[in-house]
Each structure stands twice: as structure tokens, then as C-alpha cells.
Image 1 (cartoon, one colour):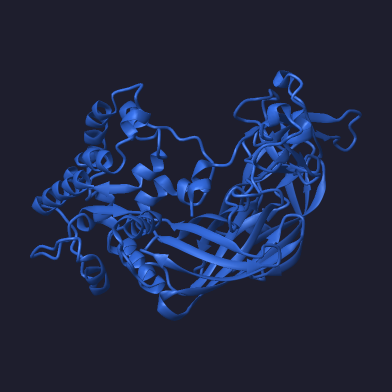
Image 2 (tube, rainbow, N blue to C red):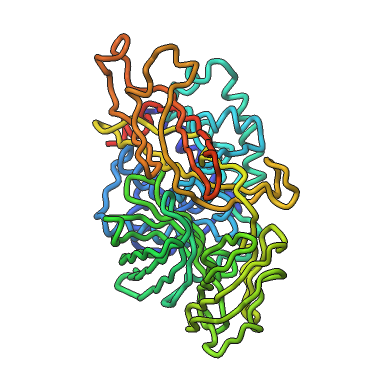
Length: 525
């Protein structure tokens, strides 16, 4: 404990002596945090003024202060503190964009650009968590002593390498890469969050498919907004959702809601630096592995295209094409719409400000590939695909790791999709011009890998339904298994699909490693 106070004191002194620092002007923050965080004549508070973080980073800091240092605040006040720090000591849009995947729960494989950081830091943290902070050089360089004071066992945990030595390499690099004041911050720190208004949206809900829709923001009390969302899927089904949320800073939207197909959902979106686009995900509470990836476009007075259904047309086929968007002129003529060579617009069957329906025919020799759709000056890039036949299918994701749960931890599902593919213009499979033709309705099963050595994994690790949802088994020991081990193991997830007019089915599979619960979930109170 004495060592921890000594390290904290060194950090306080270094921070207060720095020429940089952001003043803390919020009375609630100064009153709540002032007993431990010193202030100088420029209203800079030790530690707080020399760090910028994401909303989740500040939330974690507040929770750590309560857990380790006895900080106490009413929930409403804690939220106001988080709001202020996220706005005045947070990341701006261009900075958030680079690490947004870690905030909205997207599952990606990170690339760590520095070996010392990878070995000293990413053994415990995601790279995005580190890259989601901005600090003065003093703050970065003092992290080694701070971490050693709070977590002395980490030296033992890294006994296979010189952890302090790695820190001496990693921290100067981080100080150079992520200083407190960046060009992006200087350029965007005075931008304001959007207010009331309407946004178009398009997205993909895992297991359900592509959709378009609209979203309206209505101002509510205490800086919050109420939201109303409608979504229309490519298969014709529709859902709606009501919710609320707030902007934490100018670019971070955090919301929640309930709808016709999700009892309770969470929204994590980030605004582009130009203020025209939000990108992010929404998902059921406690299940970030499910849900949807969505893009939202601010509606202005000009025509806009949000999506085209169906988005895939076969050579030689006739179809009714629906162009969704906003501000379309009801008097549009076929000549005002461009779908590319080889697609004849025979008739406009419906025209409204939000949707145009076209009767079209694709020539038998139409060029295979993706193409833009245009309505007067509005355009949607690569929104329509022309193909001749389905050449193969894939199961996506091709590798996955669901987690056991149901007792202390939440089960982590995997929603698989079977996608049809065309070999593309060059006719060769497996290269960059192959065309993803979207989801197909496949038959699903699981099978035993040849490496399982009689473990009967298909019996114990979980099940898959005919919608492609893999549900892992329960956590903990299983008396039926050898030595009562748990239900972890690996299986193949198989999909089979027979295209129209084909004599044989197309098959694909994904590798699934069913793992134990995430350790962090087991230690979370």
C-alpha cells in the first residue's frame, strides 16, 4: 500500500509540472474528485487533466476509483461525471474511428504495430484499449511504476521475459504515437453532437439479413434523446424499435431500446468527423456477439439512396427492384435512373419520397460484377450485383469460438450464415473479384473433427439449429465425460445448399472451438 501511494505521488508531481493539461471546469467533477486530485492555478487536476479516454475508459476509471479508493457518488452524478469527462477529456471522431471496433463489440483480429507493446501490454489488454487513450509523455512513462505498484504479481506472470525492460521500450513509443494533444483533437475538439433530426440507415443483422430503414432523434430531458427506428429487411419483413440515449462528447452515441424482435438492445455508434454518418452496432443486452452492423446517414434536402432490394440480379432475369432512400421526386422517369449497361428499366411501378419500385430486365450478356445505382445526382456505390450462377458457398464466420455458460457466465453464441458466391468476371474461384451473393437458406449440422480422438464432442459441446445459431453447452464439469472434464471441444459446423436447377448440393463448413467462459466474466461482481 505504501508503494502504491509513492507511485501515485510521483505521477501527481510529474503531471502537475507538465506544460500541457486540460482544465477541469465542471463543479461536480472538481467537488467529487478534488479531495484526491490536486488542482493548480490553471484549474488543471492531477491525472485527470493529463489523460483523454473513450466513454468506456472513463466509466472504468470511475468504477476503479470506487473499488480501490472509496469514491462514492449517486448514480446520476456518476453519469454526469462520465458525460463531462467524455466530452471535455475524451477522444474526437477521427480518433474514435480507429478503435471503434472494440467499443461496439465487433470481433476482429487486431494488428499490433510494435513488438514491445504486443509483449508487454497486449498480453493483458486489447491494443484498442491502449490506443483508445491519449496521455502526456509523463503519464505514459509513469505507467510502469503505477502498474507495478498496483499489480506486483505481473512480473511473475511475465517471468518468461523482462517485463520492466519491455515497458521501457513500449512506453516511449506509446507516448510518441498517442500524445495528449493530437492534430485530430485540435481540429475537432470544438465540434458539437447532432441534435434532433432524421437519419436513413442500412445494415446487416446477423442471421436475418440486410435491411434499410430510418431513425428519428427527439430531444428529451438532461441532454438525452428519444429514438424511433423502423427497419425493412430484404425478405420483406419489418421491425420497429423505441429507445433513448445520449451523446458522450460530440461523436460517441450510447443508447438502448426495445423492439418487436429484441426485448432489450444496446446501441454503440460513432459519428464521422464531418457529422454526416454514424457507424456502429446494436445488439441484445449481454450478447454483443449477436446483433447488427449499421450505418446511419443524416437526411438533408437532397435525394439520398440508402439501399437497393434485391441487391443481386441474375443475367437474363426479370425483377422488381426497390430503391430505398429519401427525397425522391414522385415525377421521376426511367431516364432519371441509372443501373448500368445491360439492365433495362421497363416501368416505374411505384414512386414516393422514400421508395422507387422499378420493373427491370437484365440482359443475358450483361456484365458480371458490382455496379452503382443512381437516381439523378444521388448515388449508392456497388449496391447492385449481376451474376450468372452460384459457384460455391461459404459458412461465415469460417472460424469461431463460442463459450460455455449458463451458471456463472453468460453463454456466448455464434450466429452462422451460409453465403452463396459467384466466381466473378474472371471465372476463377477464391480471388478478389469473387462476388458475395448474400445469405442463402441452408441445411445445418455438426460433425466430429478427425482430431477429436473419440471425445464425442458433437454430443457434448453444443447444438446448432436450422437458422444457423450455435448454442454452446453448460459450463462446469460433466460427469459423463472422461475424467468429468467440462464441455469444451471442437466440431465442424456444416452447411448444405442445393441451388435451383442444380443436380447436386453445394457444401461448406466452419471450424468451431467451444471454449470455457471468459475469465473476466467470472470475476465481475
